[in-house]
Amino acid sequence: MSKKVRVRFAPSPTGPLHIGGVRTALFNYLFAKKHGGDFVLRIEDTDQNRYVEGAEDYIVESLNWCGISFDEGPNKNEKFGPYRQSERKDLYKQYADELIASGNAYYAFDTAEQLDAERKGHEEKGKTFIYNWHNRERGRLVNSLVLTEAETKAKIEAGEDFVIRFKSPQDETLHLTDIIRGNMKIDTNVLDDKVLFKSDGMPTYHLANIVDDHLMEITHVIRGEEWLPSLALHQLLYNAFGWEAPEFAHLPLILKPTGKGKLSKRDGDKMGFPVFPLEYTAPDGTVSRGYKEDGYFPEAVVNFLAFLGWNPGTEQEIFSLEQLVADFDLARVNKAGARFDPDKTKWFNHHYMQQQLDLDLAEQFKAIRPELSNIDVNYIALVVGLIKERATFVNDFWDLSHFFFTAPTAYDEKASKKALKEGTADVMTKVIELVNTTDDFTVENLQTNIKGWITDNEIGFGKVMMPLRLALVGALQGPDVFDIMYMIGKTETVSRIEALIKQV
Image (cartoon, rainbow, N blue to C red):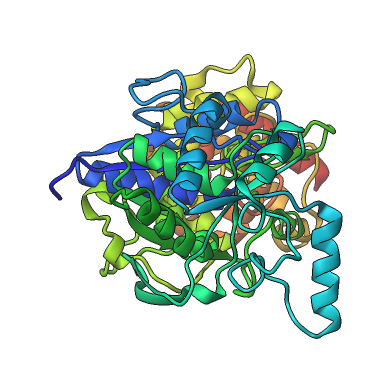
């Protein structure tokens, strides 16, 4: 690549950033870093009616949390700024005027009512109304192609609403290339004359994004599949301006867990998983779940998002961000939609849980459980080391470890029936004696003394170990019994066994 690679992520600040948008940002980031390029954030806020206060901050926070921060964008390295399209609106009018001057665009004064009447008239004849070469100069539509220059000027000066439409070419075959999808051919006769500039003085997405990509020297446009139908218009706009177009790559859709249809917030609500990176509170107070708040590690989110549409061509599934940068290749991005698998996302999080330092996890655990406020974080870290293998989220820790911090106040009914037999009280009394006589209170010594006594007296291990676990935990679950005894200490161990004997 002769030019320096420059890619952009250009979301609209109309609400929370969907996980599909994060995937698009990630692939842009990986491609840029792989080729020593720049990752640019541009805020496409031309649709002011849908603008949501705080949405831009949410986008930036989401990218930062995922570890895919932009190199250049709003308030950061603004060498091609401004990076909010609403702050560039004066710029777009000159380019719209340039297209009119070159004959590649025209003014259209049709009212919404007139266009609606045209649509209905076509529907009655079983046809679809398309504003293009077929009807733009036949007199039914009101535009500068049928009006005189004086009439057009008079309408503009009179303050009549108008839009500027692109003049799609007639009877041409447009050749398009997409890095992921290969070569395509489009008959320009099927294209409509898209609006480029609106009566409110703002450009549409089509004009603004072409102008901005050109001025910001974007070399590759990597975006979602939903923009593929716009590729023909965008290529035609580059041709009309006489500019070199960037290379295009359209990413596959992220599909519902069923594999049918695009993943939506409704799917997450219904199946119990988030579709946004961070928790989001809408202006109406509605709260949407976020991966961060649900307990996912950003490394896990990045890893599973990378596999939604891309594969490395090997069996490897665990990739750090640095490894993804090294191995990422748009040639290995699939055309077909990528099915979202909530269980697989948990699998990734479980893996990254095991890579975390016990002390770091302990601090997170302590922060969410008021019961641990007065407990030494180093003790909590030891507990975490014993139970994290069975956890997927830090939120799972309490259910897996509460008995390390508080004695059971009740015993599981099913476990009690299984563990408590005739003679259990006598056996547990002997275990108390063994515990009390274990001077050097270590896991190894406890194991040696108690297991040795069981073997010497030819007692079934279950007759001792099940009621002992029940006494310590309140159920037949948890890590090794001797680890629990060591952690809670001799006095607490004896106290819990005595409490069970009273129950028996």
